[in-house]
Amino acid sequence: MAGGTMDHPRSDVRNADIGRAYTELSRITRRASIRARGTESVLSVVDQSLVDFIVQHEGCMAIDIARYLRLNRSTISRQLSGLLAAGLIRTTDGGTGNAKPLAATEAGCAALERSVQLHRDALDERIASWSDDDIALLAGLLERLGASDEAGLPMPNGANRQPGSE
Image (cartoon, rainbow, N blue to C red; front, side, top):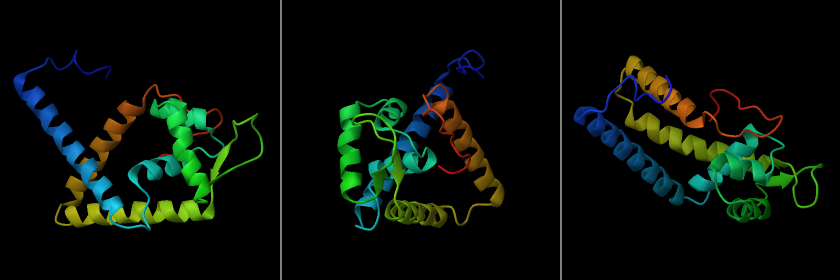
């Protein structure tokens, strides 16, 4: 469904529901950010996003990440410098000049795993009383939202996203 507005004329109810969805997604994201700040062994939401991208697209370069996230390359370079200094990512052979392919280190993969587990545990706790059908519905709707959000984003050359590993 391209855009969705042709199939669903805007209504007050639809607009209100979109507002509710946006508010809840914002709250969930904010809480995840706060939760990540609560412990040193967990990556910040930004660092987790960058390390995850590098794991999913090994060999990508800073410019690939900047294009995908639609951020300035200097912003990404600054963040990546911190990850390099912390030993969570490394440069690999190839590239030219300062443009070097990136890979996650063992420490980076372990930090990513700890961070993901913290957030998964928090999610599991919140939906523990939900039915399997409700959880499957939520997962399917979020996958659908994610796919529509990712459509048209530039992917690194030669790097393919691994389904279900976000």
